[in-house]
Amino acid sequence: MTDASPPRRRRAGGRAAHAERAGHAAIDQMPWRQPINPDRPTEPLDEDGVQAIHKGAMRILSELGIEILNPEAVAILKQAGCKVDGENVRFDEDFVMEMIGHAPADFTITPRNPAHQVTLGGRHMAFVNVSSPPNAWDLERGKRPGDFETFREFMKLTQYFNCIHVAGGYPVEPIDIHASERHLDCGYEKLVLTDKVIHAYSLGAERVEDVIEMVRLAGGLAQDAFDASPHMYTNINSVSPLKHDYPMLDGAMRCARRGQAVVVTPFTLAGAMAPVTMSGAVALSLAEGLSALALLQYIRPGCPVAIGTFTSNVDMKSGAPAFGTPEYMRATQMTGQLARFYGLPLRSSGVCAANVPDGQAMWETSNSLWAAVQSGSNLVYHAAGWLEGGLIASPEKFVMDCEVLQMIQRYCDEQVWATGPDDIAFDAIKEVGAGGHFFGCQHTQERYANAFYAPIASDWRNFEAWQMAGSLWTAERAHRIFKAILAEYQPPPMDDTHHGALYDFVQRRKAEGGAPTDF
Image 1 (tube, helix red, strand yellow):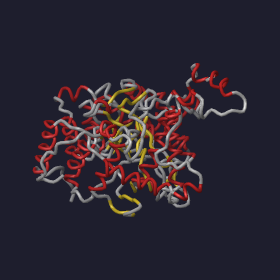
Image 2: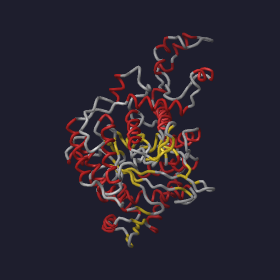
Image 3: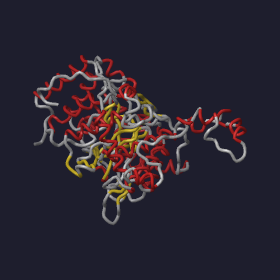
Image 4: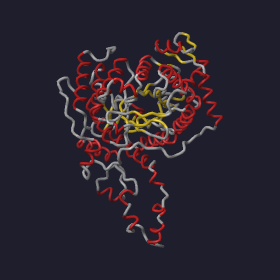
C-alpha cells in the first residue's frame, strides 16, 4: 500500500471464486468449517496431580508474586486487594479463582465476513497461520529477512486455505516498512487480502487502538456494536520467569475494556526460563497466565479470554529451544487438564525446531499438532509455516502443514466412524461375497468420490510412477502448489464504503506519524 494508492474495488474471491474455477484450481481442498474435536482429551494427570499443579501455581502467586511492570495494572490490582510491594504483586487464591470464575467457557469472534466466525472453547478447534518470524525461506529465494511482499504472499495463503481459520500475527515481519507505520500497512493488507479473524499486537497503545479502529471500520460497525462482542483479539506473553511487561498488559487491558478477546500465553522453556521438570514449568506458566487473566476479569468481568501454553524444553547441550518433543506434548496435555479445571479456552501451537521443511520439521510439527488435538486446544497458533523455532516462515512448510491440518479435520469428521445400516454395508458384503472385490459394487460407486481423505501435497503413486512424473520431493511439490495458489489468488469481496473508510483512516494515521518508536 502506498500513500498515493486509492481504494481498490475487490473482485469476488475466497470460496466463491474457488467454486467458479472448479476443475482447474491449484488444489482441490476441503471446504471451510471449524473442526469439532470428537475425542476425550488425553489426561496424564490424576486428580491429585491436577491439584498439585494448581496448588503450586497458587503458591507461586501468593508467596512469590509476579513483577508487574505496568503502573496502571499495579494500581488496579492494589485496589482489588492484592498485596503490592513496588512492582511485585501477590495474589490470594480466593481472588484468582473468583476472577477466573467470571471468564466465559467459550465465545465467538466475528470478522468482517460472518461466514468465517470462529468459536473458542468447548470442543471447537481453530488453526492460525504462522506468526511473527523475522525471516522467510523458500526453495527459490532461500533464507532472507522478512519484507512486505513476502508478508502479502503469506496473507494470500492464509485466506486461500480453508483449514486456516484465523489470520494471526504477521506471518513474517516486513522490516522494509518502518515500525511506526508497519501496523497500519500490515493491518490494512490483512483486512483486505483476508476476511478472517485478525489479531493486534500489544506493542504500544497506538498500535492496539489503530488496529481496533481498522477492524471496526472494515466491518462497517458502530462503536457500540463493535464493543458488544468480539471481532478481533490480541495475544500477549509474559516475560518468564515471573514478569509481565508494560506494553503487553496495556494492550490486553485496552482490548478487554472494548470487549475484544485476549489470549495470555506464557513462553516457558523448561531448563532455561522455567524449572527443568515439566510439572514445575507448567505450574509457573499457569501462575503467570492466571495473574494477567485475573487482572482482566477484574477490569471487565466476563470479558472473553483464553489461556495459552507454550511450555517446551531446551537442548541441555546447546541451550537451543526444542519443540515437538515428548516433553512438549505432555506439557500441552497437562495444561489442557488445568484449563478445563479453570473453565478456560486453551491455546497451543504447531511448532518445530527444524531449519528447512524436511522430515524433522514434519514429525516435530505433527507431534505438536496432535498434542493440540489430545489436549483439547481451541486455538492452535503457528499451525502452518513455522520453521527454525519461530525464526523462519516458509510457504512450502505452510502447504505441507495444511496437509496435516486437513487430515486432522477429516479425522474429526463423524462420517469416518458412522455406524448406520449403509455404513455397516451388509448388503454390499453379501453382493460381493467371498473372494470378490468392492471396486465395482454399487455401494462403492455411490460413495467413492468422498469416501476417503484426498491429499493436496502427498504423492501416493508407486516409485516408478513418481519417478516418471519428475521425482519431486515433498517440498518441491509444495513449492509448485504455493506458486499456483499465488497465480490464481483473488481477494475476498469488501464493501466499497467500508474499504474507503479503512483506507482513509490508514492514510490519516500515517500522515500523523503512526505509532511512536524508539528510533
